[in-house]
Image (tube, rainbow, N blue to C red; front, side, top):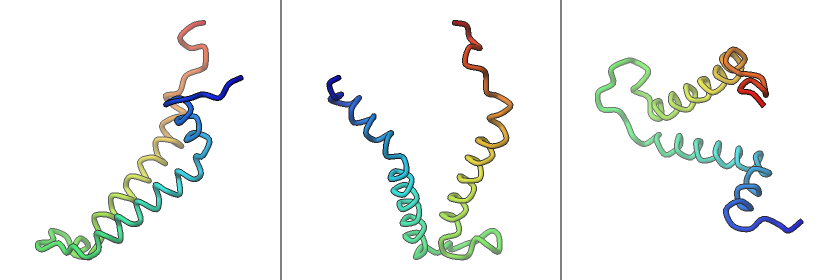
Length: 87
């Protein structure tokens, strides 16, 4: 077999390196959290949102929470068998 070229080969290569991509994405999220620290909210509406980096951290944890909830709780209810739509 010949090795895939072009976009297909690139996507196949990326899909084989999922652990590396996970570390890259979490690193980017952490850098964005750190970069949000110097920005102070001028008029906080609640007591906790006056702290630097609150909104970045809140978005990170809520996003991760939604992924975990969808994967562990909702997916078992909505998944279908392999042959659900016919042969």
